[in-house]
Image 1 (tube, rainbow, N blue to C red):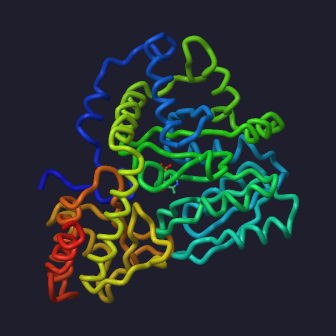
Image 2 (image 1 turned 90 degrees about the horizontal axis):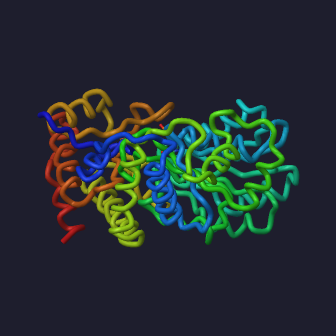
Length: 380
Ligand SMILES: *Cc1c(COP(=O)(O)O)cnc(C)c1O
C-alpha cells in the first residue's frame, strides 16, 4: 500500500491545491512580492481567527507559537495560571517555567474539561495572576474546553486570556474577538491542513500593552520585532520566513474561507459525532467525557488484550490508515482518530473499515463492519 491515509491529529492530508501553491518560485523575502503574499496571508489568518487585530506568521511548529504566546506577555517572576488536563496544557506550564515565570497549575482530570467556575475560583483566590493559559482542544485527550464561557469570566479580571487553538482553529468554533481572547495561537498542520512548519499568533491591545512591559522574551519569537518588521514597506518578518510555507498557508486559508467557517465547523462536528457513534457501534469505549469531546479528534480506549503496536501497526501496514496512539500515561491505553482538515465520510468509511477489520483479525470484536455501517447511517 503506497498511499497512507493520515487520520492523525496533525499532520493532516494536504490538498493538491496547497501542494501546488507551495511549488511556486521562492522569492526575496524582503521584496514587494513577498510583502504582498505576507499581507494577504496575515489578513486571511485574522479572518479565520475572527479578529480585527493583526495576525503574525511564525516559521516554526505550533510550539513556537505557544512559546511566543507566553514569553511575550508575562515577565519572569510574574505568575501565570496554567490549565493542565493533558499534554499540551502541561507544555504551556513547562514553557512558562523555562522562562522563569511562576506557574500555578489548575489540574483537570485527563479526559474532562476545565469549567469557567474553576477558573473564576482560581482568579478570586490569587490576584497576582497575570495571565491564564487554556488549551481549547486538548489533542492528547480529545477534549474541548469551553473557551467562550471562560472568556465571559475573564472579562471581569485584568489577567490576560491566552488560548491555544492549534488543533481547533478551522475545525471548531473560535471567535477571538467575541470570546475576548488576548493571545490566540494556531499551527499549520492541523485543521488548516497545510504542511507542518508554520504557526500563527494574534494579540489584543491589552496583550501588546503587556508586551511593552516584558523584558524577558525570547529573541527569535519577540513579537515586538515581528510587529516592527510587519509595519515596514513592504511588510516583512524579522528573520527569513519559510517562503514556501507562506504560499501553502495562503492557499490553505483561502480554502478554509471558500468553504466558510460555519460550514467547516459543522463538517468537523459531523465527523466527530459520526466517529463517536461508529466507535460505539464497534463496541469500543470512548476516553473523553462525551459532553466535552472534541470536534477534531476522538480518543478511544484500546480494547482489552489488544496492544498498541499490533492494533495501529495493522491499521497502517495492512489497511493503509495511520492512527495516533496515546501520549504519556495514556500510551497503549488509547488510540486517537484525527478527523481534522479535509475529512468527510469517505475517509471515515476507510478508517472504520480498517479499525473493524483489524480488531476482528485480532479477535477483539465479532462484527468488523459495524463501524462502517454506523458511518453510512450518520452521513445518509
Ligand atoms: C499539535 C499541537 C501543538 C503544537 O505542536 P507542534 O508539534 O509544535 O506543532 C500545540 N497545541 C496543541 C493543542 C496541539 O494539538
